Length: 204
Image 1 (cartoon, rainbow, N blue to C red):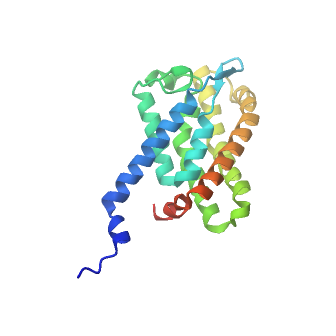
Image 2: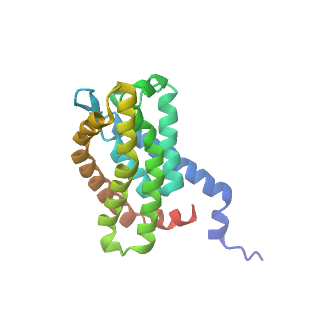
Image 3: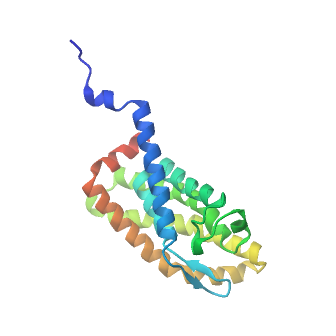
């Protein structure tokens, strides 16, 4: 008579790998959908405000560093390959010459940072305080990665001084705060409804 545990048998490496691949694909698609919500051009360079950064933060919070970074990386690769899933229905390698290129290239790195911090939050912080700390995790990804690389990209591609690029970038801060608040609220709701998301991330 077999003594194998059916639950353990279900968690084979192939099964786990297929599940992770599905999650990465689904969340890459989610970022694309959020990005294609009508954008609002801001400033003299017209770099748009979109829900793109909310999608990146939400993906990292829910999937963690490795899978979140993979999902965002997949989104970026597909867009650079020519599929019009960037802001204003754009795509292709020409996007790297746009003033917004630094923001685009920052997203996978920001997802790695936010995902790592969010995982730490789920391990160490009581459930009642998760929202605030997840929000701070997303904001850290913005402050440490997205905005510095975005400023650098604007300066290089638009050929303007870093100081001017910094001033232009400040227009995006209020929106980023709101989007990280929304991402944290959605992530907390997902973890409440599907506790397995939080537990699985410690295995990946």
